[in-house]
Amino acid sequence: MIVNNKHLINAVEWAGKKINSPQQRFILGLTAIAIQPVIDFTNKNVDRDTREVSAARTSAKIIAGTSVGVLVRWACIKAVNAFSGYDIKTEGSKVVKILKKSKKDIFTPTLARLADDVTVDNFKHLYGNHVKNLGSILATIVMIGTNFLVDVPLTVLLTNKFTKMVKSHDNASKEVKNES
Image (cartoon, rainbow, N blue to C red):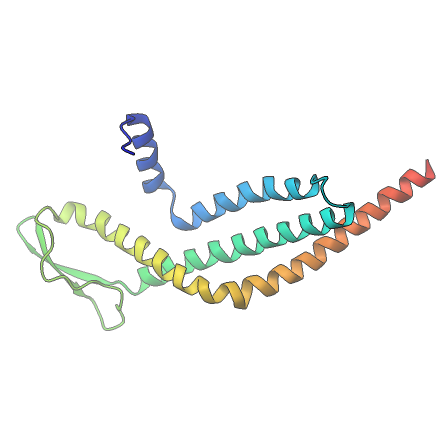
């Protein structure tokens, strides 16, 4: 499918430039927490206890996954930025080579030749995109581990807390009904 709608193309380009990876994950989490627990809690195909536990677990998974996902993405982008110091070699207004600033700069690409259209003026923007993209890729790799080491235990902890909250609220509601 080829998209020709200029408004849609402009909207996608704007979102790509203005909304970074941690922000995208946060937006997905907000959308999920607003919708999914409600769907679970109103599912009339299962009994009330199952709905309550399902809504609590869904909420816990969303909060844990979103929190860890945003934090890991943000930290990885910051780490790549911190270890991407560079100096540039120029010929006139063109950047011809990227040099590491120090030995700690392990994420700095050392390209012998760049595209002809890379100027000193647009280099910082392109390099900023490199840092964000490499940070997002690193975050994806890191999150393979954090899914098991952080998300799962945090989800279990939150599920237990949320289930107790729902059950105590449900019991309080029943007591108020019985008094009436």
